[in-house]
Length: 107
Image (cartoon, rainbow, N blue to C red; front, side, top):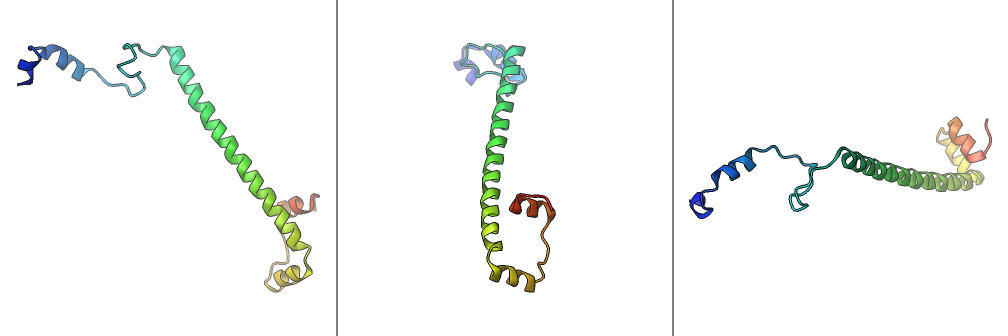
């Protein structure tokens, strides 16, 4: 029924359906231009740049949270009641890296 409405343009429709679709290809409305190797490389680099920026932002947020926790731990370790409480609970030592970060000097 559709072939009659389209004026019998079955060959063009069949050719378009059988053509493999590339999700990375530009939208058909962009004048049917295919991506050049340079365009593909720029798209990949753009995605990688975005990924790395996100990773750096996540690292900065994590570093900020760690610095805040170290400041809180420094304050708590300055309280003799807290230290005594932790010792009664069996926490008599601290991991080396945490100790270095809290005190600012190696063990």
